[in-house]
Image (cartoon, rainbow, N blue to C red; front, side, top):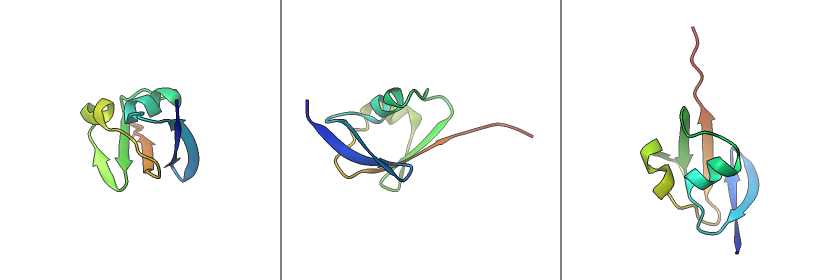
Length: 69
């Protein structure tokens, strides 16, 4: 399968072509709960992670929400 190059939190990485945001999280060993994601400047709802396809050159920002007080 072909690979594409994306940027995740400022670092370039290769992933499988046709990967979704959910696939990326799995690849990074991150659980979707508590993750805020942005692709090319647009916030992506966690309910859409499995349907959001990543494309070559996409800029992705992943932030893990941490509670505290």
